[in-house]
Length: 136
Image (tube, rainbow, N blue to C red; front, side, top):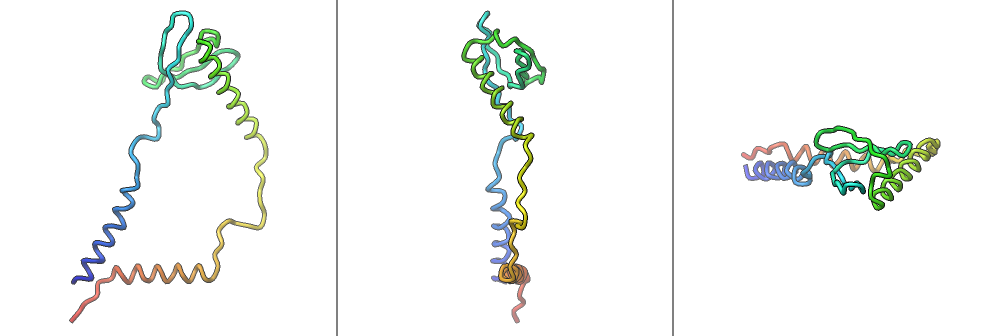
């Protein structure tokens, strides 16, 4: 009976560890930046989308509405940031067009006879530890 309790506790700890390492938060969190227009000092939060022919596309994180502003409407610091982001996007897109090199002959996963044997032994030990032993 005592061994059965230990097995149950070990199993609970095993499953609980998966929940402890999980993180909180959403994967779709907005990384909105505060942008400032130079003419009226208007400040607003939005996500950068793109720069197309000197028109900046920004998306409101709350409503999802996409706004268009001329690049020259922004303060100098924001213009610089927009141009840097545009340059980075262009660089990434240019490199994505290049073919991906393929290595031949290796799969990355090496299954040797020793590795398979160790895996089978560990699997058998796990199954054996979960089976309750009846003592008379």
